[in-house]
Amino acid sequence: MADPYGFLKHSRSEPKKRPAAERLSDWNEVYLDVPAERRDAEVRTQATRCMDCGIPFCHSGSAGCPLGNLIPEWNDLVRRGDWETASDRLHATNNFPEFTGRLCPAPCEAACVLSISHDAGGPVAIKRVEQAIADVSWEQGLVPPVQSHVSSGRRVAVVGSGPAGLAAAQQLTRAGHEVTVFERDDRLGGLLRYGIPEFKMEKKVLDRRLAQLRKEGTKFVTGCEVGVDLTVEELRSQFDAVVLAVGALRGRDDTTTPGRSLEGIHLAMEHLVPANRTCEGDGPAAIDAAGKHVVIIGGGDTGADCYGTASRQGAASVLQLDQYPMPPSTRDDARSPWPTWPYILRTYPAHEEAGERKFAVAVEEFVGDEDGHVRHIQLRKVRVEKDASGRRQVVPTSEEVEVLPADLVLLAIGFEGVEHMPLLDGLGIQLTSRGTISCGSDWQTQSPGVFVCGDAHRGASLVVWAIAEGRSVANAVDRYLTGSSDLPSPVIPNMLPLAVV
Image (cartoon, rainbow, N blue to C red):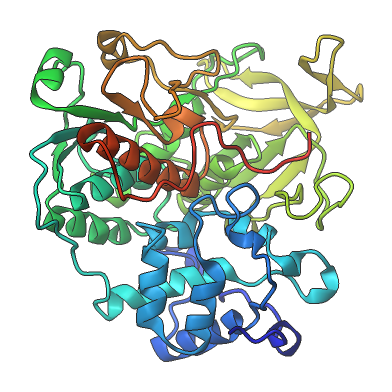
């Protein structure tokens, strides 16, 4: 049983970061690498703050963790120092806790009962405990390959090696199916490899898990675009089922602002992918922020990734712009009551290192030099409102125009959905109006025997939702191939987080 008074004895504590100057000089993860003994002691104290709350909203799929992580259980196991059992309980619901422990924004913490009142000292540091369990698991050899002793004789193709595809592949391989993961890039991992900067998750963390999947029997093919290098006819003839985990990588562009065609204006992924390739040893990036005045348009995770990347590349200045007003620093119960995801100001480690942010502003025009390269932006204060038909409009609120230097502009304004690809045409799959791939209650698309999961189905979302959908689609595929399945299925296709509408 948990200590119901733990949160009264101990305050919430975040892991310590390395000094900003040190972080900007390399690409290593931002958090301080402390001795294992000290880390374990600190995390055990944090786990002690988890109370016997009766109804743990933290692992409620609608409000907290969509994976259904048994958070109170492994918190108490960590409190007692039983890391091995804690590892078993965590891996029972999450294939890749070392990914979520580093990358997930932790809706579980927003739904923690200790988030109800500021007087409680803040939610349990669930994300910190999760990462510690994952790290201890690898350090102590608690995550050996899990190999199936029975073969189903069925073959499954997984297209895409991001978190959703990898989760589906691991579950199906462990169920006894012969699984091959196809990746069009030269390396595995999808956005985990080329979208997430090294300072957020070092790629050795990904490579370690991929090695486990290989030992379990999952096969991987890189540099293969299914639908082109492997035709749809070959795909259908060689595999009994297909899982589409192709992501939602079609970046949203800004085609209306004057000057958009100037050189030096790029979508965010055009900056992040080459930067990650540089860290992999592929040579200098074609788009580099060194010595440039960088402007990032968009206030979300991808914008923050560009922010930290540009700072490490040696940008002369970094400015991030957001059309919306600065959010409050604490939850507004009238707008986003507990246990919903709170509308608050999100400050990432990158924001503490360099540069600045501006809110309630928009670029009125990109201004270039005689060579056609962007050199300035014209900025105006704005507000976002809806017109009579409900469409979003950005309305200027001031006549004053601010001119700021800009040698490199990065558009981090979201994603429009799945990229158009020959594979979908060959399978007869049409995208929805949201740019996603629809499915039935059994995760099966309009093409028989073809299933979908992750961002390709949900649209751009969280790593924890990708893994949850990958696990769920594995259950559906297993059931499709064998008639029944014991694999877990934490979410259903139309499941959404709890929200105020």
